[in-house]
Image (cartoon, rainbow, N blue to C red):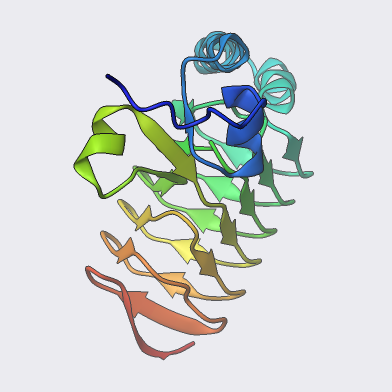
Length: 191
């Protein structure tokens, strides 16, 4: 007999997801928002001019600052949990799984094939088999440079002015004003 993880919780899975609690992604509202995001991502990739692309990006994401440049393709879960600060440049193939909030500061440089991954899953095999998941927010400070192929894991904050070297896997918070490289990413010097 399957475990009823939510026996005393009247919230929908969507409400649990938004609260950052464990949930199962079988909620109709979750499916509707994911479908909306997929349609907008396809329109964004196919936009024939910058003005049309900018309008679609503004519809897809929660907030897009002035002068933001995001090169398609862009992959998101919802888009509505992502904010990008002014004058930030995002190169091709950003994957931003925004089950929890993703905040990207102003004047950032995001290299190609970067992954910002907020979802988490239980380590225990039973709940994971039962499709439970949750998420932790990611915060990228102002004037941060994420090199190509960087992976930022759930719950990580990267401080202002820091540089993350290409291919690094950021599993823990990175302070402001440092260079971090490797897997797992470690601080190697100040900037």
